[in-house]
Image (cartoon, rainbow, N blue to C red; front, top):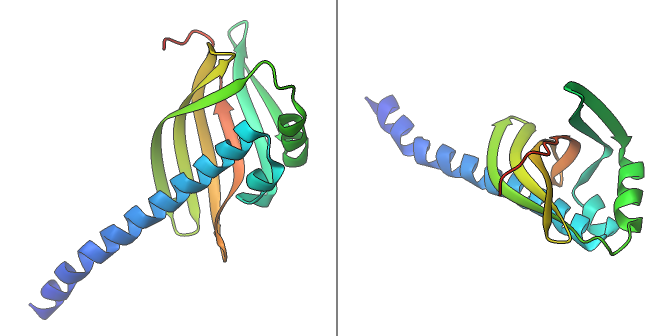
Length: 149
């Protein structure tokens, strides 16, 4: 009976801890996209693991196409892009899963160029829990061009 009572006392703490972790992960993802929109490599790098890379999956003539980018190459392209057209990536929903030091944020998005919907898809964002918090080590996105806003 004592074990049951102790278990019932700790369940809310475990649930609170999990919710706090998910909030921290969402905050890391939102910080990444804040830096993305502001073309700020300092902000972007503050939430990245040193091994960061990005992959994009799209379709060309009904065949899946994978493009991979080394982290530094991607970041250079983001911060050196022209101010026009204006890039806006709207994060539509978050589903976060955690297993120890590994987390995945499944984030639906819409990508807009100068206020016009360009494409949509999902960012599958992998994070590792380091000593100083959660860091992104991989983003794989899908890109669909027949989106409804």
